[in-house]
Amino acid sequence: MSARPRRRRSGGDSVAVIGLGRFGGAVAEHLGRLGHSVLGIDEDLALVQAWGERLTHVVQADSTDADALRRLGVNEMSHAVVGIGADIEASVLTVLALSELGVPDIWAKAISPNHGRILERTGAHHVVFPEADMGERVANLVTGKLMDFIEFDDGFAIVRTRTPADAAGRTLAASALRSRFGVTVVAVKRSGRDFAYATPETVPEAGDQLIVAGHTAQVQAFAGL
Image (cartoon, rainbow, N blue to C red):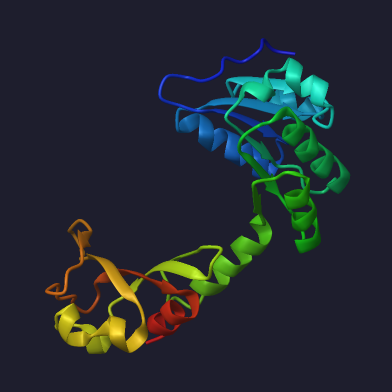
């Protein structure tokens, strides 16, 4: 075991990432790049050794054991991410242990809706479905109508798409996209220029990129124009 991690770096949060497989490892690495103090935990010694040079602190431990997590100081950390997927029992018991320790912000990976519901009832504050979310994202991007796509839990989405033909060369007020399609153009990006916040007087041209917000079905329909 490595030394007990400090609670936080200057300007960063303290995060325990449990399960250093493909998902957990990627989360841990990016958190480190963002300046956060990351404690990586995995039961697999080979994974611990592989991540030993890439993370601030990496330890081999049984994450289902609340006492073991307490000894590592996980109960003092701001956030925890459970990246365990295939071993559903270990995933659920780890979330339960974190909940018992009072960790204020618990994120957990789920591999099915039932798994996700169990994690929520066990104490996870946020449940993510990496494979399903990425599949939906790719499906929305693969036709080329959407250049980027982010959907929120309440059916609201933000997308990046091209200016539709009937809106090019007209002010947003004149094209009335909001009243016609139920979407809001948030910003416009022209080649060689920075993104600019949109106003009713903004005139997008053909080929411009638009950041558009609205209900998922509406922004998808708008992008299909």
